[in-house]
Amino acid sequence: MATDRSTPADPGPAYALTQMIPLAALSVVFLDTATDFFPDDPLVGVVTPTRLALLVGLLAVAVPVRGRPRTRLRDFRTRLDLPVALLLGAAVVTTFRGGHPTAPLRGLLTAIACYYLVVGLRRTQPESWRAVGLLALAGATAAAAAAFSQVTNEIPTGFCRTGLLTDVACDSGGPGVLIRATGTFANPNLLAAFLVLLLPFVLLAAVSVDERTARTVIVLAGTLGCGALLTTFSRAGYVAGAAGLLVLAGAYRLAPRLADRTRRRLTAAVGLLALGGAAAAIWAVSRAGNSLGVRGQAWHAALDIAVRNPLGVGLGRSGAVISATAPGGRTFVHAHNMWLNWLVETGPLGLLALVAVTVVAWSSAARAARAKSAVGTVGLASLTGFFLIGMMDHPANLDRIEMLFWLILATVMAETPSGWRSGKDQVSPTYTSPPHHPRHGPHPPGTTIPAQPVASSPVGRNVEDGAPSPEGARG
Figure 1 (cartoon, rainbow, N blue to C red):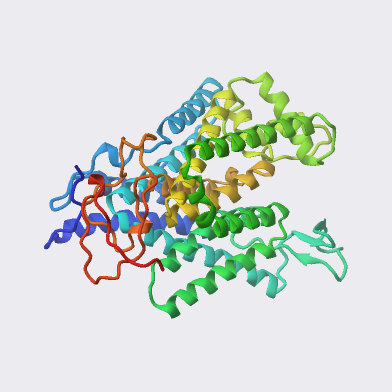
Figure 2: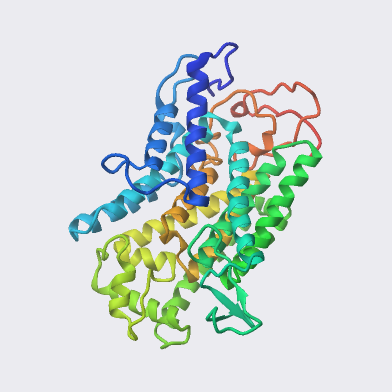
């Protein structure tokens, strides 16, 4: 049976405070990923402002409070628990066996703490999907406004293009030179990855309001973000952004057609074949000289390094090792491929863990989208675009993008049950009454989720008992 998550008649200040603190911690993380608002220098020891906010937020979710159901371990469980543990284990082994600095490992632990904070928040406060949408709107707007400011005021960023997206020197590009906006980041490709990952979640802010003028403002702000993506002149960003839009446009129509198990297995097989084909293509290109320029050099050097270092070269060290191995004296920051970079830094164990994270997260988002979940649909669009960028780049090498990536993963995984079988953990959060917009909250796979109820005070029964939810027309 589900536990009642309804708010008591007189919850008291302690209850209100513990409900607010995790949301405040989530706001801190969102603002920091978008603007680098908080300093990276520790307040004491290794405790930075962001880590302090995450710690306080986790304690607020976990500590028992009078008037609130006790938070249980199952409220934090997700399908990614085992891959995350495997990834963390590979990182620990390569760090301490190689005697490398522990700062990158602490960064990974911070990102994982953010993941479980968001999962716990989403499970204990199902309506927090509204906060995620509003924070995504604020973060995307801040980065987009900075990007447009650079373009409209012709502020040099050090990155310019001309012709068919050809890189040129900004001081010698001629009259047709175009400034590539970087926004709140140091590189236009990082800004593109940030917007591709975050912009789909702006739609959650749009569906969380009922008033037309407020929704219009939100849509205009989302359009500003899409325009900022164009100002980056990032080819990978353009492809990933277009793929995300296609997913958003087609998910509600195409996903329900995968209700048949055979079709789902066929789709999963095609996806795995595509992933394997992409890996084979990268291996082939890396052996074909400079057919892809610097990326081909980076991939070739990365594969050679991975063969010689089965335990990895250490977190954050792929760029330096690849620079020392690749010919030409070019400086690399990473392997220009997210999965290949983890192979270099943590070995085959880390690669296996990240592949599992990729497959489980994407398939879980697809299953949620098939069940008409708005969070699942925007999560599927976000992850699809970001994984496409990850094939040719590794934006999560930056800690702010890495934090946002884990935050998005948590939002998606909290939407789905922790088990794969239909009879296990049917509903992730435990509450009796459905939220005001039941189609956006967590739900069992394959359940038809109605839209906003027409009645002013709908009465819903426990979804675990298979009872119908309030009926109403889809908006």
